[in-house]
Image (cartoon, rainbow, N blue to C red):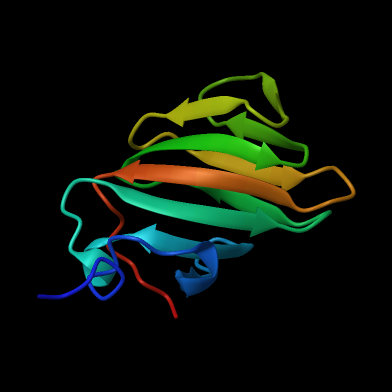
Length: 123
């Protein structure tokens, strides 16, 4: 019988699959190609000071949860800036364009959940 670690049901961020598709270093932890997830993807993203994730959209619903750092976020359908800070959550409906920039002096660390999981796996 395989162990939890062998099935990648339990893993640390350092073991995640690296992805740089929209900027920043993202470590995918839950994904169909990693552990067979069918309905959710979980990624931790590290956005360095001054770095940004340009406006982009996708067919997945997405939620950010800020673990560390500060930043600015904009959802394309709204004229309001979102000030990112630890313990804040932002939900993006499917198809909603969104932009993120680290405006602080330490890495902005985001826990990102997507449903369904994203298809692209950029190594």
